[in-house]
Structures are given as structure tokens and as C-alpha cells.
Length: 192
Image (tube, rainbow, N blue to C red; front, side):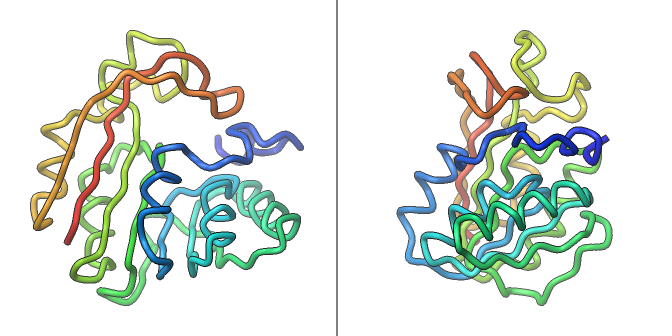
């Protein structure tokens, strides 16, 4: 599905970073960043331009190719791996930040807990994704309620963090043709 979605020349979620991710990234000194499910590379390229050492992965070949083109156009280096949550493996405690930007799958709990192993003590988690209330909107996200987030689920996924702030907000989203209009999202900041 993702190769088909990313097959066009157009960047279907745009080339600008997610606003929440951008705001949080700018509050921290550059370090090592992991971006699971990075798609077409908009967040990875922005972070690399801010001096971060970026590792991203996605299972889409088309997404990887577009991310690498975007990085070349912006004259930045990113490490982009063709990988899935199930097989992705990194050194424990190796990233200063991990950001989940609209990474909706049916293995949410497992993916979040697995990725935490790769975060350094004191490292930061940033997450923005559609809430279960997004089913009331027609502005993006999966149509399966089990793939959408709730505050309680996210708190449970990241219960091992020393600090966590999870909130639900209605926002206006303008991220390409598939994320456009009013949306209900979960925003999360956490510290290991």
C-alpha cells in the first residue's frame, strides 16, 4: 500500500516537517535521532538540516527513494533504512530522541515498547498521531479504530518513561493531500 501511495512524483504528505515535531526538535541540542515509519523523509531532512544525526526507516522502497531525493535536494545526509518495526534493530540506549509522526500500525504497543530500548537514559520521545476521535473527521488517518490512539493507550505503552505528557487536541492540519483539515490528534512528550 505505501509503495503505491508514495509512487507519484508529488510528496503526498508535503516536504515540510510536522509542526509539533519541529517545535520540539528546536528545543534540544542536536544529537542522534531515530524516525520510525518516516515515509517520504520530510521530518528526517528537516532534522538533518538542523544538525541532527538522523536514522530513519520505513518498509516502503518508494518512500525511501523520495526521502533520499529530498535529502540530496536539501544537501543534507540522512541514514534511511528499508526496514519494518518487526525487524528494525539498533544498539540499545543509542538515540537522544525518537519521534513517531503518524506511525499507525496494528502493533502499536509492541512497536513503542521495542523502540524505547534504543533510547538513551534522559532521551526524549515525541509522538503525534490521530486519536480515536479522528473517525469523526475525514481529514486523514486509518479508518480502523484499533490503529488510532487514546491517551490511556499511549500512557500504557510508555509507562517506563520517567516523565510523560499526553494530551488530545483538535488541530488544523495541512500536510499534503492525505492530511488536510480539522483533525483530532494525540500529542506526547516523554523522557526516559
